[in-house]
Length: 430
Image (cartoon, rainbow, N blue to C red):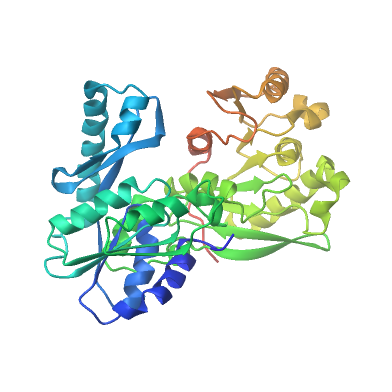
């Protein structure tokens, strides 16, 4: 993957936009993910930062597929071929647009906090996003900038579908794209960390406050020793955190995994700290026997929990995925730790079968409705849990929750469970 995160992408993109340094340019970020990228560009160019507000018009039955987009001032771009292909009626399209206009107005008030938009008349507008897949939002953003009086409009993105980037050249005066891969599937595949950008970060960046989420949340790399084995982790502590969730990963889903970060981000916004820790060393992850040694993983999770308790104080929750789900269930029964809540998503709860009857910790099991094998395992595990337990089934999801929206739905379920059982306490960043 070419980009570590959006800030890294912004810094690298800014280097390609150096010719506009010191000019009359205004940098316009597309919320939400485009704003951290745009913030780095604006800082490097010494240019003012603003947002260009657009909203995708998704299919009523598949919102991730864009029919078009809308922008401020009544702007709208719709793909008539898609409307005809899917048989979308005028009433259906109007209903989608009404909902998106409401959200657009909410974001305008939230992001600008009463500030007037930066004037664009006679200036160069540099429209920045974290990537382009269909180009619908970018086209509306270009139209919005021209309607506001921009003399010249540039679209700048770290990555984009090759044919879309080519097509955008008909709308914008210039298009700058660092990566135009032939095998393009989604923007997120080109980032190691594609965690969703919260509204709070967008508002903070536009207000001119530091855009480093690490500083805002106490984000740091840590090393936790399980015996003599060093385990790498990423500790994130929001202000006034209400407990901490330790992520127990299966193989291939370490602390830098975008999937893990996307599950952690809603917890941060809910005021819950997280520790994303790798229970296996890089060399151990290649050993399949180690990957399925859930007793080993559980024992290391216990050591990690004791470190967390000593550093941050209770309460602690577990979020387990893959073989880490079984490890979390096993560790919750260990007398040396006190665990307030467990969430297991996907994975193999059957690997903890011999101790399921000992789990008294409130436990949520999350399975995909289309993952028949895992769903059956989770139903059996649920029936054996003697304490408070809930089985949540995410519609349309398969084993890895790769279907649009399913991973986010699972993250929200986990957030609500932890918010219910982690009693608010103040966690010192010490």
